[in-house]
Amino acid sequence: MNPSAAHTQAGSGYEPGGRSPSRRATTGLTFIEVLLATLIAGTMLVAATSALTGTVQARQIMADRPVTAFSLAREIHSASQVLPRATGDGVPATIGSEVVTLDDLDGATFSPPISSRLAQIAGSIGWSQEVHLEHVDLASPGTLAADATSASTLLRLTVTVRQAAAVVGTYIWWLNP
Image 1 (cartoon, rainbow, N blue to C red):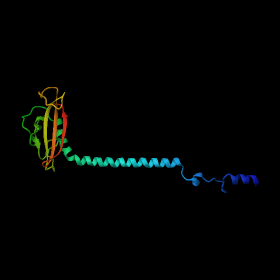
Image 2: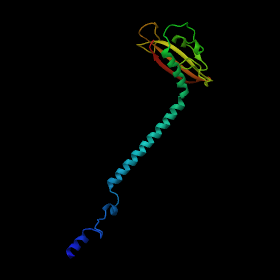
Image 3: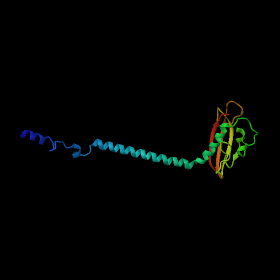
Image 4: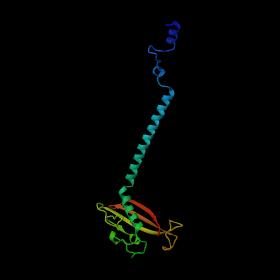
């Protein structure tokens, strides 16, 4: 073996097996690698915190505005969508079978509540639905319409849901007459 070749191999960082040791194994992580790892960990922490916050807010909304009350109000709204718009006898219904036209809902109170198919909802004892229909002026929805048959009117459907005597929710929808 040539002495100068042995000196070259020894000085070039080769190990006896002919392999070069990794610089990373001797120096650790670079600043860029630490920065990227911190960025990824921070992003994951922010995402987890946002998800947890969203869950807590959704729970508070459901606790403040119970799903049951909205569901009962929605049943009346669904029924109002399919009822004929003809003028009824002017007497508010007290049970679902008395509802023939949309006008029968005005002033009605259903206890126990009714479904969109106008049948009593089993298991909802203690709940009630109060329904009001108002003809309002299309140009000024806060004003009652002088002529309910005018083409420039809307119907405002208001459903108040109670559990026992306490109002749990009041919901409003706009209907075409």
